Length: 219
Image (cartoon, rainbow, N blue to C red; front, side, top):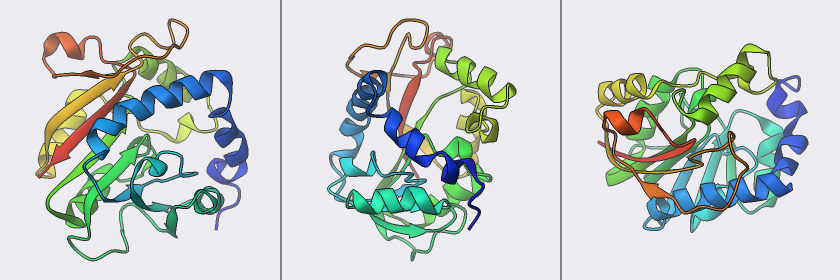
């Protein structure tokens, strides 16, 4: 166990941020964006579960993460957890009707391999939910700037350009079936409660991606 990892060292500070005034509003907006996609799922595997806040949206959740201390917090929240790599999921083929990545895929070393693993453990007619901050959004540009300045978390991320990300999905034999977005003007304007919008990825939308995008992806 690498206790020097920022995911181990700063886990309490990271988790406490969700209880701050700004964090509560952002979390509520992000939850509302995920809920239309997850509500039909019974058993969900969250890859990169962290402290488990998003796994709680599922009726029954299993969470994996490479970091140990966040898993302890997720377990206290009632999530069934396993310490494992996203690129080597410890589950049989076709085990879950839904696999979810919430703000985690950008932090996984091999995104391509982790998507193939998610596809492997997916039941027939199942779906993958991927929630990301893309480079082209206002929020993505802020995160990229923080990464370049050596931010303890974001310096470890590989934020995706949406076009490149879509090509990676296609290379994995996956397609986008549905998408929702929120945090349209954040952080350029103060955060506020907002309802998610269903989005399509034409040229105009790509030029003004919401800060938080949730994709329903299927084989």
